[in-house]
Image 1 (cartoon, rainbow, N blue to C red):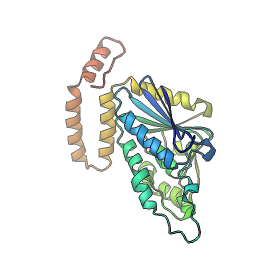
Image 2 (cartoon, rainbow, N blue to C red):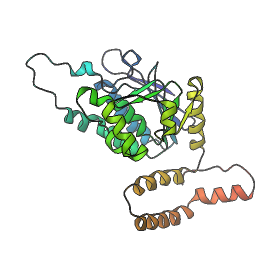
Image 3 (cartoon, rainbow, N blue to C red):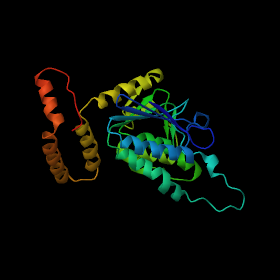
Image 4 (tube, helix red, strand yellow):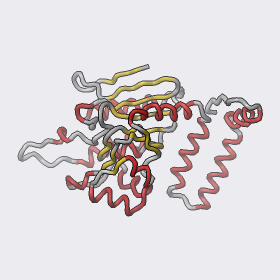
Length: 271
């Protein structure tokens, strides 16, 4: 199923494709490097809510149309006439960006960012909020907020140092210099670099593997990794014990062990 979600006028800011348990969201403003405007925010919020509620969807891919993944905020929406009051950027984050990042970090199924070209500003944070990032060789990751007197937002200050450590995170945030895909893979900012022409094939293969996998277990992996970022060791050991007990009683575990012993491919139900 392909669904073009329209925004203001005739622009279709987001394309939604659901096939075989995999949902693909394509940011669809290539003329503006897929930067976010109000219409794309509305379409993204609606799509994430709908896909999150669809139990047939077992994996999510986010990518960009054209030559870039996402350039962040469309600054043409922020133009002010002389004498206008300054914008409330915090209100924009509270109403639009922060709910999107929270939704992705806590999304019930594995999420994959397939990054083509530039992922800048909030577009970089959007990619890093996904569980796994695959990038084409020509991709670049940029936190350029310092160039216009701002801080990395949309979770940028939270994600960067957890992924690559304080020194590299501060380097990205203070200089605003782009990090090439190969370097991003080397420092642990992203999962994997592939040739540009192979990007979507790699992302789809990964998503299809998740879609046919033990969905309940995958969801718990996401949940415990997030909890482990703030838990102490004792709390995390207790959480692992309780979660493993729950999963050991699941249909997926029973099916997985049967399939292993019978030397066949398991058929998981996510239960």
